[in-house]
Length: 295
Image (cartoon, rainbow, N blue to C red; front, side, top):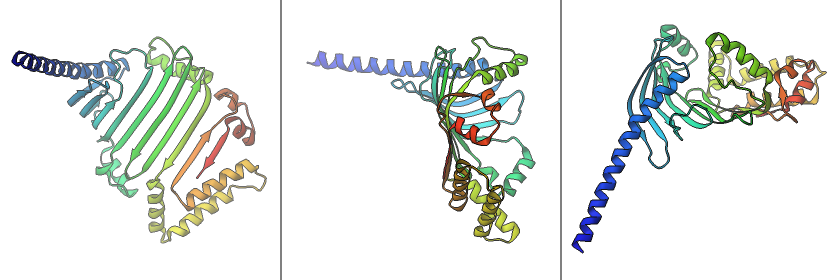
């Protein structure tokens, strides 16, 4: 029995050493993969990271205390944490990904930026952004589904978006900077919009703007809201379609009770940007894009 117990202890110790060694290796490799990924994306700069940890079981990589300085923008960008939920080692194809950027701050803008933020009623020292993105790109199907794109700032609110494209002909080879603009135009002209939505939740920035306007002009919040609604009504000619009137009514509801506003595209069939440019009437544009607005 003593030999069996001793063998178990040895196995446990060896297993612990293997896990610790594997964890150390993954942590070291993850940091190198981050630098490689930025280089592949043609983002040149200096990246500093306080700590890297990779979950052996889920594959999630956590990068803590990031400081990023690009060649074009010398002001550093700070991030408390970057989480890559499924870290794909050495992947050259964007494929499927889910990541979060937590506690983003920047020193860009200097005194002018700080003055503007304060004028808007914001605390510039406390501005901190969180971004979450989950997408699925299938090159063979030429589809891109950005299922989650969420941007949050405690003083401004939360913006949530999703986009779904078909016939997306992304180039298989890396293009030069000179070719990038023309390539982007070509891709956008060929792509089809399958659906999309944009939601502004907990709109603190709008409420703050109302409060600032009321303070500057000696008005009440109710009077500011009434003036905004009058502006929306003034844009109506009386000949609008039911669809346009419905959208205006939802915007007025949002002004009266700003909790959330959702703009959704649910087209009967995918449409392209060039196709939409050829449409002349607002009603036809709304119908083709399947526009819905809900407050």
